Length: 283
Image (cartoon, rainbow, N blue to C red; front, side, top):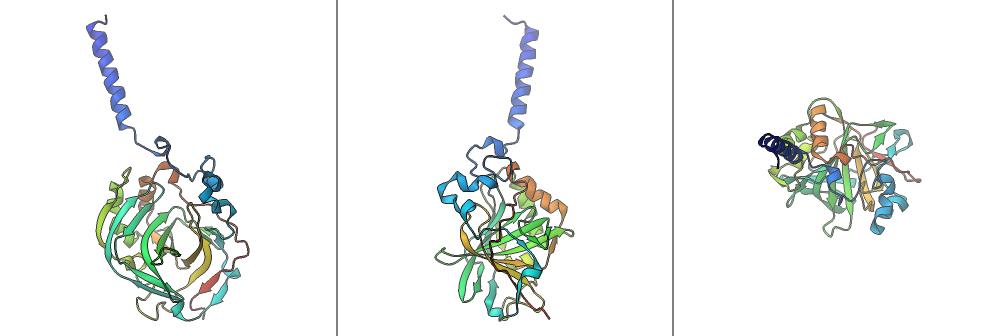
């Protein structure tokens, strides 16, 4: 039988171990159900996405995958009608959510749409990748935002992307920063109230016809989702104008997601002969 001193010492040790165990953060390695990983040396890393599930085969076999590297000198310049891209966003209630691999803002209801060559794509959500997934003229940026749109029947997808360098704080991120702090290791969404998607890049587009201001430029190409199942035939628009976000804002996004997605940019994919157009005023 242990003496009283041994009993007290044993209880202290047990309590200390219990407290340390309970205070250990729950991170990616504690969740074996995680479906894919961003670490290149991981069995579920990007190089293996196409082997993890049959329905993800496009991740390895697809010929029009995203992201890509864009060289402006190789783009076809186009100054056609602004009806090619009509933007009509409006405020709507939204929820911010930690989806483990990215922080997303999901609009609940009608937040407006974009129209591409006469087809309407409804705004569904936006999310961030750090560093940027696309590269332009040999450069990778510090952050990339994707605004995801779908047709009413959900059969077609269009994405508008924005690039960011470290610099002044980003206005749209400021609107959700306090909520991002509360999302660490939390999977359920937090209501944001009414969020205006036009604030993502105020002034980048006009919200009536003609849609694009003189001097506004964007790259367009046919690609895919940048996460499994890597579905193709996604119409991509990547804004040429680069915005800023503070280092602290980007670090908040990185700290909130799981460790495996701290750098959640998919590697550059082969172009495979695809054409890229640069729209805007080239005079």
